Image 1 (cartoon, rainbow over the protein chains, first blue to last red):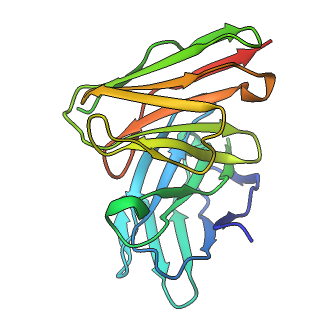
Image 2 (image 1 turned 180 degrees about the vertical axis):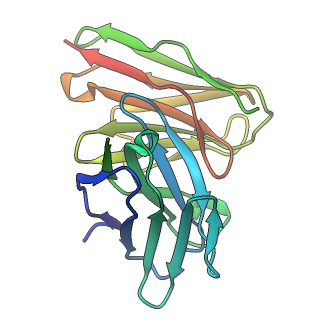
Length: 114
Length: 108
């Protein structure tokens, strides 16, 4: 089983749609969770951290369910510029020291259509 | 603004050559990382470093070595390049990680 699993997509949605991505992780000791965005042929960029209480940044909402080891990203009112690959990222173990490694999912491709 | 730079965007080398990939960050970060990214496999950690002259193996260190003589610079070395090392190489610094633009390496 992969440490971080995502639906690869592609998700083809019209402008203005709401789209949700899901991600599961296998290590129950993981403490830190993130969503990164990667545009075609570019480097990944941090989109947002994911907190237990859930957090929102404009049109983006991230949620964490520790019991189910599940992370989600919701994008409301999709824009053409949201087209990218979204990477779910989890740290491998307890924060700090040699276990302070990030594990990247293979990403979910989003294509927003005009 | 954090700035991570990599020495080359595109590089073509021949099998058996020694290859150096350089990464520099300008924010005095202690943590630096080297990844490779391949289709269907995502980003995989090769090596990382928490301080000068300190290095730790990641998940796929075979065929690679690293050097960190100064805090701002973290070099990835392919001792004898092979075709299966053709990939996108990404350097990152800080926690959570901030990436450089990547080096697309082709080994012929």
